[in-house]
Amino acid sequence: MQLTSKSRFSRLTRRVGTSALALIAVAALDTAASSAQADSSRAASPTAAHRAPTITKDAFGSTAEGPVDRYTLTNGQGVRVRIITFGGIVQTIEVPDRHGRNTNVALGFATLTPYLTNPAYFGALIGRYGNRIALGKFTLDGVTYQLPINNDPNSLHGGTVGFDKHIWAATPFRRGGDVGLVLRLTSPDGDQGYPGTLTVQVTYTLTASNGLRVDYRATTDKATIVNLTNHTYFNLHGEGTGSINDHKLLLNANRYTPVDSTLIPTGTLDPVAGTPMDFTRPTAIGARVRDSFGQLVFGRGYDHNWVVNRHDSTSLVLAARLSDDSSGRVVSMFTDQPGIQFYSGNFLDATLIGTSGHMYREGDGLALETQHYPDSPNHANFPSTVLRPGQVYRTTTVYQFGTEH
Ligand code: BGC
Image (cartoon, rainbow, N blue to C red; front, side, top):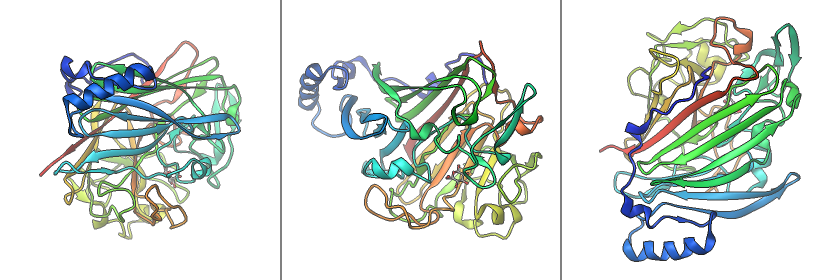
């Protein structure tokens, strides 16, 4: 776990010039000012691309906890991201293809109701503990805690009512050519069986250089465990257009954590070399997903944690690069986390209807979840996920969008 403050991504997040800043429209911050600015933006730049960055808000229904808002962020370079305050969910990510045509590349739903159950965790913020904890049990400082078993026989993604099922308090902001949203949630002591009051802040930033940066921060008043992530599924052809088997994936990882039949790590870090888990060179996902390799049989495909190659425990490094030859779209993921779960959408079974009205079948999207290794609290040899009072949990992941020809 990383416990120090840092900011080292400036070389990847170049800012736009000051002329663009004069045109920024932030409707959620100041409606009157923003409409005047938006008008001047249209006058100055008639095309969709290269407009000033904006952030706007609309109502997105309500839950027992209150009203849900949806924020729409645009960066003036053709990228548009929608985030809802329920679950801090990234609803859509529209990015251009090599010809400048925009498509939504994130799986999700058009309305709030299906998000209330969201069994696939589309786009959601995951906490307190992303991924599985064996039998929902862990021991910390001599006390054993029991979490809800919601993925028999284990606890998955924070339990029955995880961070993906709460409304987060939102504050939009703009900084230079970037726009973003700060989301805050307080999880009380004992929430889903976890000890300590956890105060969480997640900041989404859409950068002028087509990056979506996610900064996580948490503090506690009692020793606890924490492992936060985001559960966006990608399909770079466009959400609802079919399989991702032809996408090429590179994982910057020479090792992975093999699992048992319930997808709990056995505790070893095994080499990927010579197995279908080897993505050290860009490889089509479908090339080996139906291989009879025992690990793939357990996961019904890829559903594993890879050990990110890194020289230290704090730098942002490339963890994954996903590309689609047909559209030219590419997303590169940079993180300071020790692991990344690659899940090839194996349990999508045509029961969920996506944002554009198409059903999602197996392999119609894939998730890449930067994280600590699954079940770390039960493996002393894995990097620690313990957070103590006085410490600050901080971690950053950047999804960098682009195209190639
Ligand atoms: C897990 C999968 C699970 C999916 C949706 C992924 O993070 O690894 O096993 O089916 O989330 O719940």
